[in-house]
Amino acid sequence: MTTPAERFVSQSADYLAGDYLPRIARCLAQLEEADVWWRPNEASNSIGNLILHLMGNARQWILSGVAGRPDDRRRQEEFDRRAPIPKAELLRRLDQTVAEVAAAIRAVGVDRLLEPRLIQGYDTTVLGAIYHVVEHFSMHTGQIILLAKARTGGDLGFYDVKHGIARPNWARSAEGVPLD
Image (cartoon, rainbow, N blue to C red; front, top):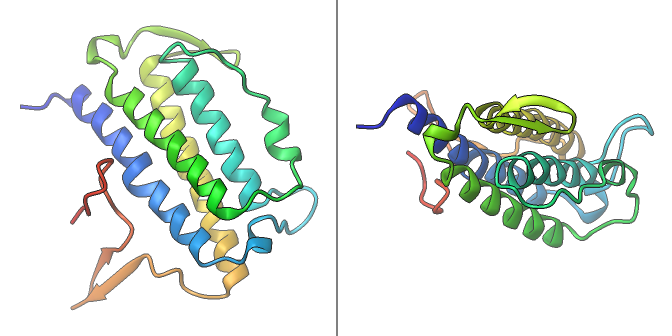
């Protein structure tokens, strides 16, 4: 039987790898290269900047803050970048980051969830760090979806609707197996 804490750890990794990453990948697949770096104005971020930001945040909070790797994040550079990175390279980097982060989350023993951490100046716990990254990823995935819809002018095809029931097209487990 799975405990709620074990389920939290597993579901957190699944959200990142099996829900948010495939949605971002679907967005990138439907965009032109220039669309990935388009920004509505200078006060807003491009999809490319948001992806760089997601990678930096997840690495800082999970790989460094939870797993103990060195913290080499340069946060402002995530937003300042204007030189495009090809979308295939961005997706490759994001996929690698999410795989590492999901593995690090899955490796967390439930007895460690309440261990204190100081990450980016915030007092938190291992559980708090995981929750932060999942929530943060969710928020920016929504922004990426909105920007992709604005650039394509159409439905991104996340769902198949049959007999009035919407079934997700994007969801995959961390192992790549479709989630039904």
